[in-house]
Length: 129
Image 1 (cartoon, rainbow, N blue to C red):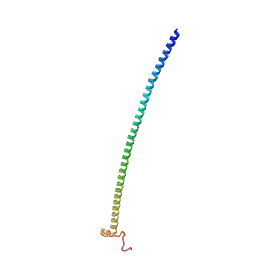
Image 2 (cartoon, rainbow, N blue to C red):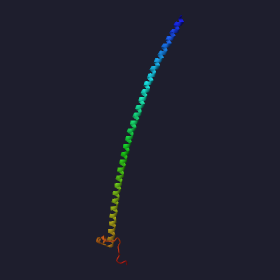
Image 3 (cartoon, rainbow, N blue to C red):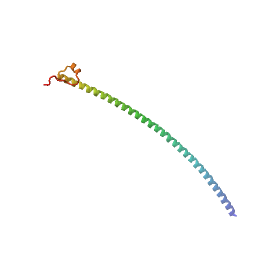
């Protein structure tokens, strides 16, 4: 009669084993679902942080580009103004030198400064001998 008791014991043991395996499987499935949910939340948060970082980076880049363009425009304006001033100074220097040369030339020819004022730009010689 030990066989029916042994079979019943095996059946009860097998039932308890299957029940325990089912409970362990269910608990593990719950853990996997919880971890999957946490992973998805972390991925969404990471994507959100990446988007925010990209927006901040783009904003900073745009600001730097605007600052660079403003500085470049200021430098261009400065150098254009400087070029205008330098060309004006060169013009004044040239005119001054030209006046000095004309004055010296007229003095060598014996013309008075008054005669020089009304000179048509060329000198007439009285007697080409």
